[in-house]
Image 1 (spheres, rainbow, N blue to C red):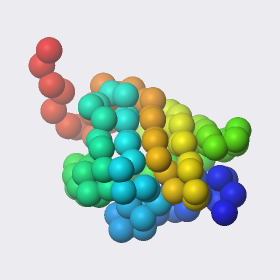
Image 2 (cartoon, rainbow, N blue to C red):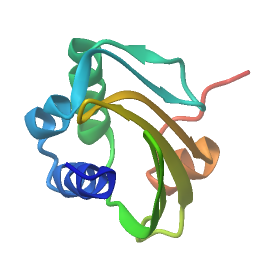
Image 3 (cartoon, rainbow, N blue to C red):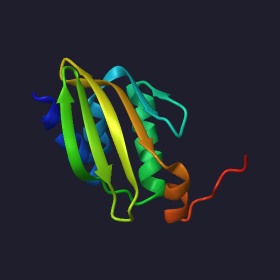
Image 4 (tube, rainbow, N blue to C red):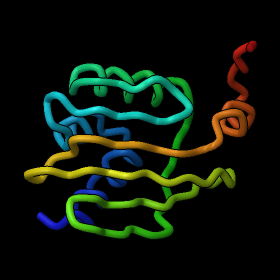
Length: 119
């Protein structure tokens, strides 16, 4: 399967809050590191992370660009509230081994009226 197809599936599952579909895109020992948070390691932990995130906020991913380079895909996205970000996906044998995302957590928390952690 082409990398772009995997990322398009990721976005479709994400927008439909399909936790099982999302989880099946990952290797058992995958890492999801949204750099505003600690890395999440392993398919079970990633499944739990998506469940928690979808419960906490209404999230929609609007694709702006998908780029491919070897085993890597890059997703540039925005949401309906104006937040922008990008995700890097290392895909091996048709599954995500590493996902790294960059976005503004403070803006996200404010947009969704979520508590802002004290430093």
